[in-house]
Length: 61
Image (cartoon, rainbow, N blue to C red):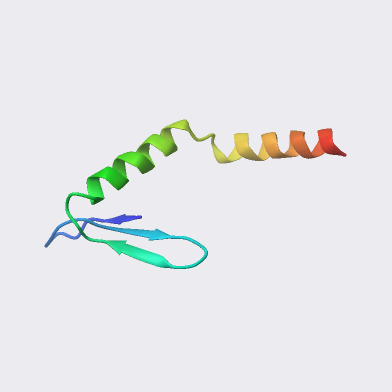
């Protein structure tokens, strides 16, 4: 997640099962944004993902 406050630099938030991390360093936030946009560009839509999971579940049973 990236926050873009009107009165300052962008800030990113990363989380995982163990902890969350706020990233404030201006050099790091654009790199994170680019990584997230790259992953999002390759990801399937919600509906496509559900269909693929359903098809896999049917094949396994």
